[in-house]
Image (cartoon, rainbow, N blue to C red; front, side):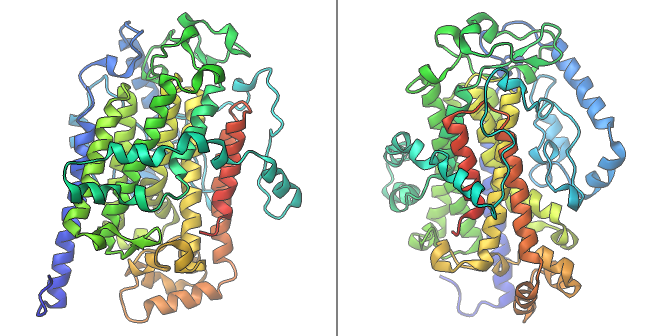
Length: 547
């Protein structure tokens, strides 16, 4: 119970203390999950079938990193002064202490893929281990694709008709996801009734569309329809040496040739005839089970983040119902979120792929980064579109894109393959398009449609794409944005300018469209399949949805 004599200053101190405490729990959760990793042995990032030493590959990888860091250094210097790759969770010194020569150091997706359009000064980042293989034809040699060059045009009747003809993404995996809620409720059951009820709250009351598990199920099917690439004998460029699955043997499916390193390892060992996953043997297999479990893990992490965010933001509603902390208490809500993260960590370890554990642990770390970035961003950065997009990456896109690459790894594809790269790139752009559309709807949709309060971001002092574009058009909004709309009349002034603007909302929609098209372009590098085409339709849905 709050003290009736508590002053505003006392409340501010209490709220800051509460925010720090909850943010600290996020950091602890990320640290515990990272602790699952075996960082002492190089075999942590290689399939069980590979026993050869990888020192040559690591030395080559270090040279690759060095050369990549020296390329375009002039362009990078200004960016590195403004933004830190790992901005808020641990210092670079602490990060260095946790790595050895054999551990994987992931590059944030925004340093792998284009975050702003060319018109807004964006460009494709330099080639690195995570984005080097982006060939648009290597996976489709001898395979017809009726959707090559597919381009979004929301004003075209022909485009809208063609989208409707694509497979419905939710119906395509409806059977697989039907038992999802029941099985995930069992996975998060606890002997403590209150904790169990709070943890199960979202899974029992509001089923929703299961957006993230749907993406993972569809991606699992799409990568199963893709022949694993083979690293050339000289270790130079990966090739897709076969147009069909019959030409791949178990021996060369698991072989790493030439420069051996984690870029051409990290794929799960496939215990199937022929050593690879195909559309024929995928459904019901152990690979399929682990990919489905990854979908459950991602949903647990996502729901835990919602529960914690609602405590931090003091939100009353979520998904059309009361927030967990309003139903129970802040303590129960925080413990329920912690418990979900702990269960997700255990299930993640049971996927038996240490590289996937590190990738998904990094996704959790990114969620922490986004939350603290939102709380502690310097005033000047609140006006920068790239800063807004990086925060959106941390809070939304990172979980989706890392889950997509992990799905490819569990399906037998190597970390640096064209397949795995396309998967992460798709998730990166889809996640950003989703968040930008969400931010547009915050200004245009009613609260009863959204399932959460409208204008929630402004109430938290946050400026999203529509408001940032309005501030570019009306400079008098910039001080308001930088002080997070704290003074009386700030919100009203900002809203009047936004709704008066003839360009702000359209520019925000164009930014969402840019990322949606980039997501489709990444998908189109995969061979055509029913599941891939369903993901194309899902991408269109992301930017046309009304809630």
